[in-house]
Image (cartoon, rainbow, N blue to C red; front, side, top):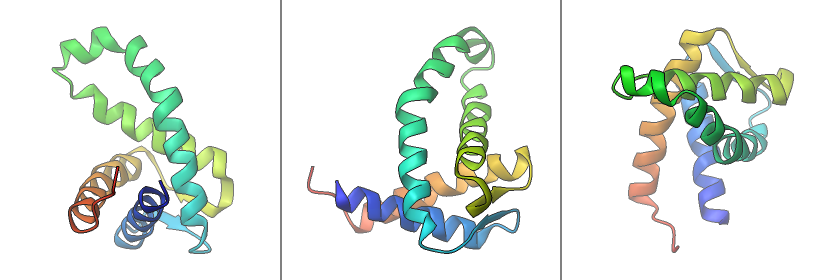
Amino acid sequence: MVTRLVISALAVLITALTLDGVTVEPWWWAVIIAIVLGFVNSWIRPLVKLLALPINILTLGLFTLVINALMVMLCSWIVGPHFEVDNFWWALCFSIVMTLVSWLLHLFFPSKN
């Protein structure tokens, strides 16, 4: 559990440092952002995906990228000034890059679960 949190926080921090349109200040707020993103992705995202199922089927699953970007923007709104995403496109880039960074970090530091 702690390993996943640290990896998620590192992924948030690395992704925010990589993209110009996303800021995390101060750096230790990445842990709180990772917790909020985890909560949003485990509770709100499944409901949104269920409601958007028809359009997701029509777009062959590509609408999931839009849902992911919206979840990042929701997290930015919840956390406030410590996590700022400039617009929808930066949120979309953040969700894609964070997925890749998180995948790489999990590859190098697998959790025991």
